[in-house]
Image (cartoon, rainbow, N blue to C red; front, side, top):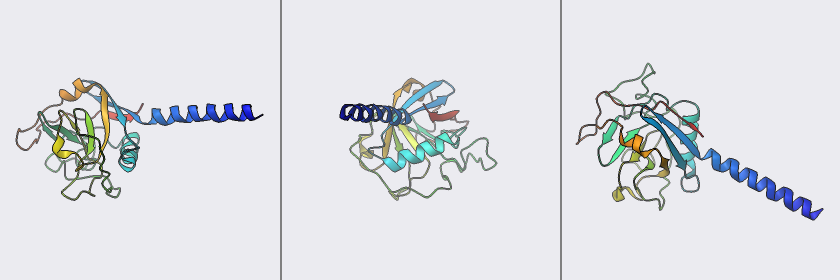
Length: 185
């Protein structure tokens, strides 16, 4: 009987681990192709939870990449002013809005801001992240332990590289590319 219980517990553990792992992979659809993202809930649990909630409810669908600086990063996620299918869409305000959910406390970690890292965008207040995020084109060590990194592109970074770049100084993008959708894998 003990062997049966042991095998049952082992089987259940393996199944739940597999389900949890699957839930931490996302597919970001862009016009150039699909991007696979791995999330790090053990490093930034609240940021991962928020990202998945907004993604899986369609809030990020049709949101523009409003700030894109070549050799640095592509920023998106303004679900208020950056969603092209919303009546509140406003290119000049994109980057100033967020979701109706409360801001998140910073979750700084040892994750380095290297190529492909997803990190929470925020204002000067470390506890002001809400819905916006950015993806690093290259290493940005000055952001380490200053921004809440919560995931990484593991496949399809070449499609991130194709996102339309903005002004070299401000990163502002005229006629920006957008997220088609982001969903759990």
